[in-house]
Image (cartoon, rainbow, N blue to C red; front, top):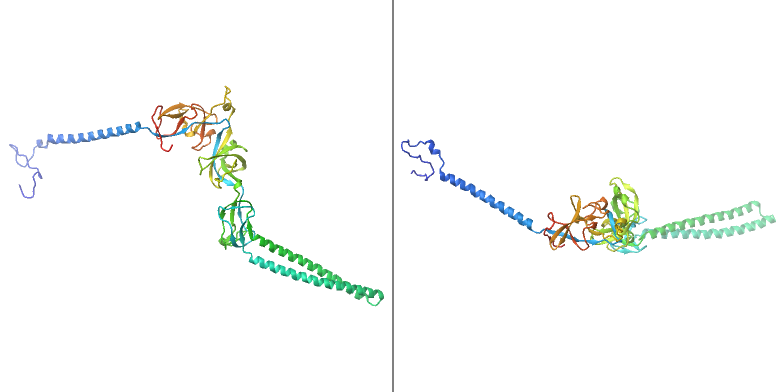
Length: 444
């Protein structure tokens, strides 16, 4: 073997009898049986591995399908005889009928602000004061002018009395023939002149008093008071800033000082699609649920339907009054409203004369199975498929009453199929079937 070559690095010519060394025959291209068996053995290993993986996947799938899914359940409730059905659901906000951004009636510098956000105020309570130095100086000046005018009036009255006495003397002398007619005319002219000057001064005094009254009124306007009782929800200016009843001075002048809300005037404002406005009427009962307190249901009635539509949103504004206010209700809260309709006669008194037993379940519990409304009743870890009969006002299975879009928490009324206190499935991670084993999800 030559140096630098390893065994098997080069194929050596096969030496056979009668063959020239270094040359090959066609028979030398034959594949060795041991190599063929080795290749077959490699494919077998991959096939076995794929079969094992498939078996494991099938076993895992069967194990998963065999597990009991965790479901959400709800209890069937009986609707009282005074209950009502929801014919329309809508969302809106809590708004006050009386809300005022208080501003000053005159332009001035804010000297004091006596309120903070969240503070309750009474009607006519002082909220802020403006700097009144200039107004007080104007009042002092006006009073001085008035006093000077009054003093001149006293002087004129003294002169008037002297002119009247002089006229009497001239009149007597004229009768005796001593005085002339010209002297008499001069005496009468002096009296009339002093009377006119007195009238002028009296009017000047009235004008001075009117100017003083304006200044005093401006002084009263430096005190800003609450227009009604309520709660301060916004403080819009700070001490030292200029305030004005009109927008002026750019961003350096405030037009509002504080915003007051009358908490006794809170109501709900919702936009109802004009396609469903026929289901809303004045004095119609409603139930309302605040987004902040989803487990708390309030009652109210439609106060008014605003007789105008929004052409951009194709909605009509509806205002709803609360039956009873609560301190938890604050302005601009989101709220969901269900417009109610009294029970229909065929539900209230059936043919047998007995009151109808109407059951309420969450809308998500009712499924549509080939056009048949069904529910899955849970009992001892097993679900049972039940066909149910919907109330005529409940609409199609899984839909909102009357065809309006409902929230997930809306109830559906059932006339048959379930009993009070039974548990129905409202959600499941996989499709259910009759007799299927389930378990109740944690936190249900």
